[in-house]
Length: 186
Figure 1 (spheres, rainbow, N blue to C red):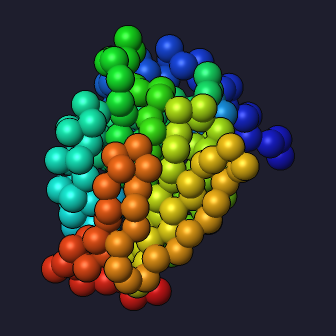
Figure 2 (cartoon, rainbow, N blue to C red):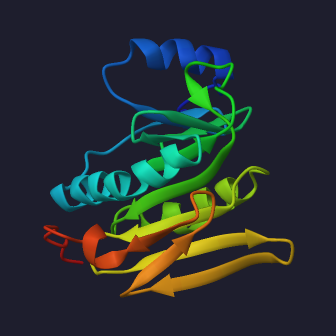
């Protein structure tokens, strides 16, 4: 019995054309499209709360805030749909995606943790424009901030109080972030 043929990687242009016609969203990883899973209520509320808390500070800095349905190009063959990203400066010349966020956040659940903490963290932190990557837990009140500096990347963990976020230069109040959220069970 023969082996199944490996699909040929999609070019950026082929992916964008195909994705525009697809009823489901797909992330492109090294040229291979992967369907996105549905999100929990906790995930959805956390993204909404985070966007609400960061919208005013982002706008005050002249930045735009995108959630869940805007693609981020991290390489010629990889595009993700971050849960939230903040982009400052001029508008992207590429309507289907952004390329230069200063802040990216992913809501972490048991099913996405390995990807968010591994592959995506490395890809996002490789972007020259990025100042911070946030991991927001959906199973406990916990926010991790990977903050870039001239000395590398600092890793900070917050379980209460406020985290000062670069890019928007605003505090993130964990109590407000987790307000009305029924956490997922691990």
